[in-house]
Each structure stands twice: as C-alpha cells, then as structure tokens.
Length: 460
Ligand SMILES: *Cc1c(COP(=O)(O)O)cnc(C)c1O
Image (cartoon, rainbow, N blue to C red; front, top):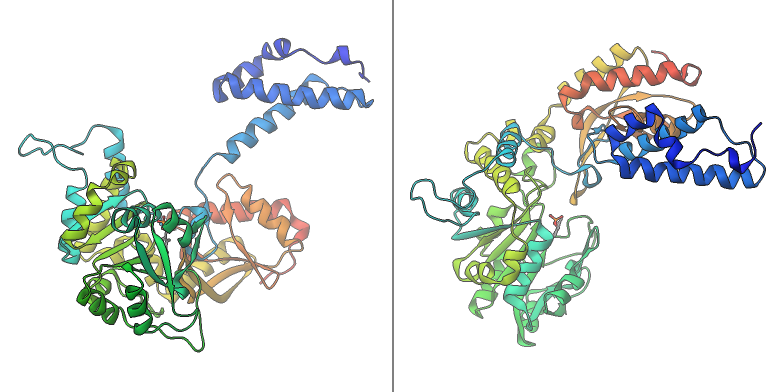
C-alpha cells in the first residue's frame, strides 16, 4: 500500500501517459491539465489523512470520469418525454425542417444578410422578415430583436423614457428567468403608474392614470399564472379607444404571441397577435420561440409612427438579431403564409396531435419494451403560455422500485431522457418526443431495465 506523498506521480509524468495524450487530442490541453491538478490535489489531501495512493490505472480512471463529466455538462440534445411542449429549460420550441435548413445554410457560409442581390446595394437585415410579417399580419412595420425581453425593453426605452407608463396592478408580473416588469420599466427610464387592483381594473382606472400624467399604456399578458374568481378588466378595444382619443400609445406585450387559434385544439384562448392589432394596439411584441414555434427572437410589430422611433433608438442596434435567427424566423413565417404551420411547425404539430396516434405510439413503445402500461394523462404547453391548460394524452408508464434513481439513469443515457414521476410511476409522454427519437428512447429504456432487473415489478 502506497501512502508516501512522494509516490504521487507528478503532473509532467502523467502528461506522458499514452492515454493522457489521447485525452489531450479529444479535450484539449487546458481541460486535461486542469482535471489532472484537481485529481492529484484530492489524492494528496487523502494521502495526508493516511489514505492509500491509487495506482496509475485508478488515477486514469478518475481522470476519464471527470473529463466525461465536463463533456456531459455541455449543451447537448435530449429527449423531452415530459409532455411540456415549450419547455424553457429544454430550449423551448423545436424548429421546423425549413427553419433548420435555412439556419444551417446561413451559418455555414456567407448570405445576403444586409445586401440586396437585385440592386447590389445595402439593405437592412430585418427587411425580409419584416416584409413577411407585413403580409401575415397586415401591419405597417416590424422589427426583430434578440428575444421578447429585449423587445419590451427597447419599446419602453424608445417610447417611455422619462415618462409615466400606466399599467394595471394585475399585470405587474415576473415572467421567469429574472424578467420582472418593474425592473424593466426602471431600466428603460420609465416611471410606473399602477392602476386598479390585483383582480379588478376598470376603464376609469386607465382614465385616471392618464390624467395623472401617463404617456403610454402598457398591457402585459400574465403568461404564467391565472387569477380566477372575482376578476375583471376592460377589453383591449376599449382601452385603445380611450388611449387614441387622448393620443397616447398602447403597447401590448403578448409574450407567447399565438398566430393560430388555440381554441381549435381544445385549449383556452391564448391572445392572438392579430386580435391585439385589430383591437387597436399601436405596438405589439411577442417571442419567436414560444407559440410562434421559431428561433429565439423578439418581434415588435405595429404602427409606423412608433416603429420608426423604436428603430432609431440606439438600443435597437445593441439588441439586433443575428443572421442565423433571422433566416430561421423567415422560414418559420413562410410556413404560416403557406398555411402549413399546423403540419410543419413542431410546436403546432405537437399541440394538434390526435389522442389516437399518441396512444398508438405509447403502445408501440410498451410492446417493444415488454413492460409497463399505457395510461391516460395530460400534456401541458409550458414556456409561460396557457397556464393550467392541458391537452389529453397517453403516457407510457413504468412502475419501478426507486423512481428517482430511475429518472437519474434516464438522464444519464447517451441521449439523455427527461421523463416525469406521476403517482409513483415513471411516465413518458409521446407528444413531445420527436418521432425520430422513438427508437433510441425504447432501446435506452430496455437497457436501463436490464441493468436494474430486480427493480421493476409489474409486467403486463
Ligand atoms: C415570455 C415573455 C417575455 C419574455 O420573452 P423572452 O422571449 O423569453 O425574452 C416577456 N413578456 C411576456 C408577457 C412573456 O410571456
């Protein structure tokens, strides 16, 4: 047994091991060197306490494990079997084939991003997306920025800096990931005039807010929570009518920004971009990667008068959309214009998926795996859209002795799998699993079941 500190190999010595040279090729010298130092440090500390110094084989095994851990921590594809469609932690909307191709092309080489092929002159990078949005929504002008948080920030900075903004108490929200409306308002130099109460807002509250000096009305869609019971607020049309008579703009932050009607799929009504515009909102902003089903982006649409000011603000340049985002967004918008969104945009494909076909998929999994049961369940929209709303689905369920340990094993699969525990069962929702992932999902589950043979109880 080696316990003498002098028996610990030096960093230089370890770097000479043939296997370590291979690691350096795979991971790069800084990472390998860093991990060698950490492993040696631990060995030294343990040796000082009288622990044995491991043989070189064991040391290399430890190094391999920590290097693998770094690799596992990288952003990589996962299977989302949670049934949460717009899972923010898992990257929100998966993209359509056309968006993926467009993004691949625009990132692989040069593109006509700011160049007009026909005239040979310069153009604005958001021009094509803006044109498509005009055709789709009938607006005067549009602007695309990095995400909707920056869209809101930019709009308020351009239109309400050093001014008072009227907002209903029920809409002073936190969206998640640190997006709190009062903070955004403060940052943009706007001052808050809170009106109404948490549950009741009247048109006269808005009137009073404007009388107190309000120069802009901000409406925020309370995306991720629901107030029920004795609640009420004026219709957007009424608010816009009042505002326009007093020459004050109305900005509507819709968040998810549905362009298709969610009620068609048995869901509650999610406010649509078209409706806000129709009601008379001057500026409407929404995310590109929520219900629109495109890449992360913030979309600002509305009237020329205000969009002009917004586009000129210095923040517009700071928050500008990148070329990959823009090509993906253009491709996504084209699917809407072709009336193919429901068929080709994964978010809408998932929402509109028939219960019957979900059941068939869950049953096919169950059959191939040879264990588990197919039970009815519920999928959710997620991503701060349609809180409390669910879609009926069919789940493949497994009864195992240690559900948490099983979930961990699923996460540790080569292609990590995210599932849920429901009534002590592990459940997998086919709605959010991409069809091309079915095979890997099934084989990974089979592998884990074989490894933990004693742990499953039920056979059907
Ligand atoms: C999601 C959301 C935002 C933030 O949008 P991101 O695209 O995540 O930056 C802002 N406002 C509302 C109402 C939202 O729902």
